[in-house]
Amino acid sequence: MREVILAKSAGFCFGVQRAVDTVYSKCGCENVYTYGPIIHNEEVVKDLEQKGVHVINNADELPESSTVIIRSHGVSRKVYDELADRSSEVIDATCPFVLKIHKIVREESSKGSQIVIIGNEKHPEVEGITGWSISDTYVVDTKEKAENLSLDKNRTVCIVSQTTFNYNKFKELVEIISEKGYNIIIRNTICNATEERQTEAREIAKRADAMIVIGGSSSSNTRKLYEICKKECDDTFYIQTMNDLDLKSLGRAECIGITAGASTPNNIIEEVYTNVREFCRDVRGIN
Image (cartoon, rainbow, N blue to C red; front, side, top):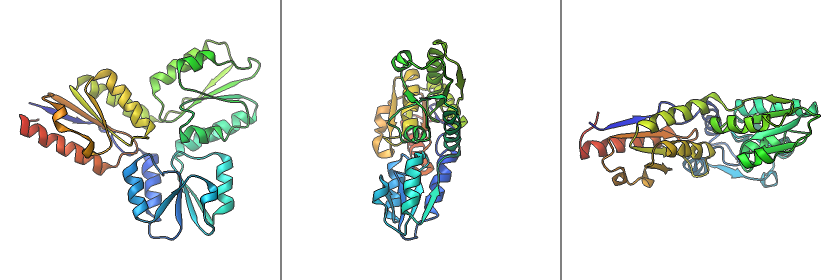
């Protein structure tokens, strides 16, 4: 009998749910904006736009007498101050786990520590974290960058991580930097939800003949889930919605796994899960 496994950890994490709920509670109010997409999911952003919540990407775009909600990824101190100067109300929906990193970076950099962020330098979360440092700051996301990293051995090095970074890759890069002989403080700031999601996805992908990963095209944590699953299961598909999935591509896979990124709404996950189960029933039968 064919089997479809839906990851228990699939979908909104705590921080994303909190941010999304915050924005939806403001729907219907006038002049409500989010600084950047509240989460990296095109369907959610589109729905909020239809409900009158608009996205800005620069504080200069913000009209006076407006409410601005800071996205779950957080922003730099400079952007935060700019928003506070221009708006009548700033609502900070930054994920608490990201705020914790801001605090670490702010405190350690004020002591003169060099800051190393393990993450993607172009990701908004990392851009925000970087903006809370007042010391030398370096962003590392590859072995090559870690190997080429040259720091002052007379100063402490504080290493933090983007909350959604691949945990195994984080350990690998930290090990490379540690071998250089620096005085290092390591703060593993990958959130527990990310570690659990990645671990569960890997275990399901090992069992599956086909794996479906659901999430926005710009979602960093979904992309990492896809990379993890692809290593374990060749037939891994990255989709945003059910419209992106050709059920025939699943063939006669006996075991199909489904997971989703932290910014994927439950209704999209349920739609994919339901359609895959129905397809399997039609083809041959399912547990």
